[in-house]
Image 1 (tube, rainbow, N blue to C red):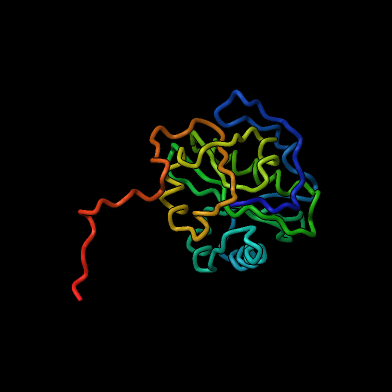
Image 2 (image 1 turned 135 degrees about the vertical axis):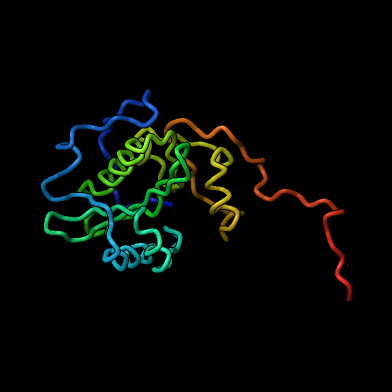
Amino acid sequence: MVLSPVLEPPSPSFSPSLPIPLHPPESELKTPLLRTRKAQLHDAGAIHHLIDSFTHDNTLLSRSYAEICDNIHTFTIVETSSGQFIGCAALHVYGQHLAEIRSIVVDPKTQKTGAGSLLVRTLLDQAEARRIKCVCLFTRIPAFFQHFYFRVVERQTLPDKVRKDCIHCTRRNACDEIAMAIGELPDSLLASNFYPSRRHADLVQLQL
């Protein structure tokens, strides 16, 4: 997951001492021009089109239309007051110990509107409402998320994410994304090597 580089840094407003920070009053989270809501199935086409437009240069990992439909309940969209879709983000919940912000992107034509900040705050609110202890993400622009008090972490401290995505990713050996998290990291750790080494005894000789 990465955030589109067109998004502007937000104004710091959170207390870093809280596991998942409390947010400003509702009036500060929304502008007269923007609002967020949970995605519905009829939003899947717009979500897929926007995400797909950022996959060709590897800004975002590709997600099929079918996958988006299957996971539509994880998505939140940001739209104008007239209902025009301008961006989306997903909160994937692994359990009460961990959730991940994924597929966060905003239409480049709507830069400097606060849409990206609004999406992040909305997803953090959702995680806080579920009493999730840690929220993670992978990004190439960590400075944006540091405004929300996300901190850089070793990806091995996020075993659920590694098992779900990293070990299957074609870029796993040349990944340039930075792992970040806010809150209490999961207790369990993975070994530093995503792929455990095989012993010679585990190998099976093919009969020709």
